[in-house]
Length: 141
Image 1: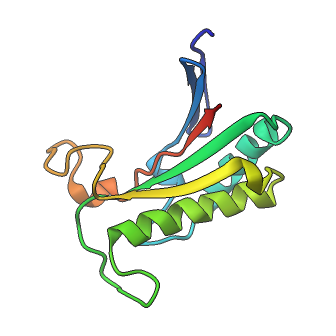
Image 2 (image 1 turned 120 degrees about the vertical axis):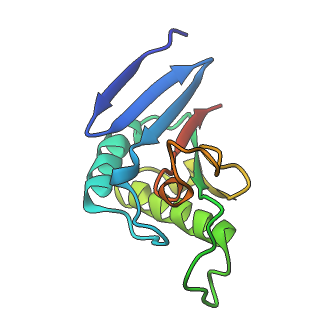
């Protein structure tokens, strides 16, 4: 299967080795410590849902990632970055389901600070910015 990509409103889709990888630019997703998706991100996810909702043979894995900066507001439901990453993945999942993707096709998972998208000590990407950079992968098969 060939590798192809398109970029529209900071939504990037790549197919590699038979798997579909979808990434959203950090400014489309979450404010630091938040689980609420930015309205631009909601729009991009609705576009994604239109593209995949009739593809019933695709299984979608939504992965949430954070940096290693502790969350500032702990609650009964959110104790740490692992919880935050799962809640963010669930927020993305709900938008896709409301937009027509079957919930049977989607798995939400959180990687927390244990698999950051960039090293926490990267000078070009300070740790506080990583919490915004959540990538969401759709994988077939």
